[in-house]
View 1: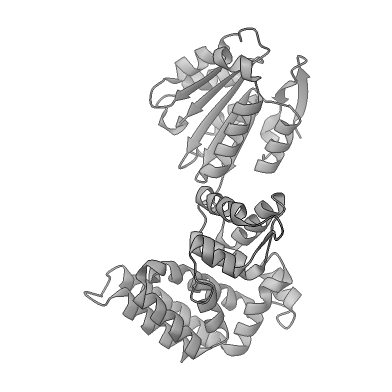
View 2 (view 1 turned 135 degrees about the vertical axis):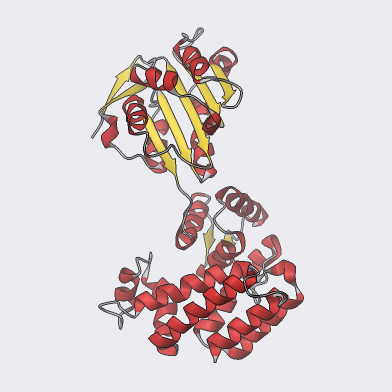
Length: 358
């Protein structure tokens, strides 16, 4: 466990033996909201949302507004060298207790030797924030990673898995004192996906549209504000397949075939593959007769989420599920042009749904 020490009345903090701590977005924000700022923040990963949130908070709260003109600097990795960043970080603040240096596009830095040297003895009056997006530092650069951890905070922002999106949506809306039902949550998750910046933007748009007298998001609200049909969507298609409702499934496929902008095979295939893959795993659950047991086996967030898998095990045999998974892979390959010179996506989807339901 790292030892955090306070430095100056400004509560600038530094780290000893920080390499033992794994930082999360929540733990970093908790420290920042207490007014505790580390000398170095190296923010990296494929999910830019958390990187931007941490960086923006530091930019807005590490200095008083009147201190920013002379003590807050924004640099870009493609325009500066590591040596220039290190030199800037060693400068003393002007009429303030600290300075803030933000390096955007840090992934474009070519040589990092001078930064590594700086990380070994970072200035206690500087908060250096490096934003490394669309990837992470090569894990083989162990010494470089170790010096970053020793200097301050190393954070990897990973893409959320599809199964984690409903929890993210619910938590985000709860902070805004807005409730949402499970179906609406899944509609939004399926239609927008794991791009958290876009997802939160859409959620904010929906929240603004809600009247003060009714702070609930329903399927009708989702349809009105996001444009996802409450009757013809990926959630309803999955529900029809889970329950082997042939008529409903064909209605939805027909709708999407006639309204290609509403959805396509490319968005449905991952959803169907994930469901049947988990369904196959559910058959091996030690307590597969129990909703709680299946939820625990599949690492679902609540027993409610296991309901579809309990229904699926009643409606599909293990052998049929294996065959469906194989068929999904075949259709996926055909949708990408493999052994399929001219069959359109709509016909491929009809072929898949027919195979699943019959």
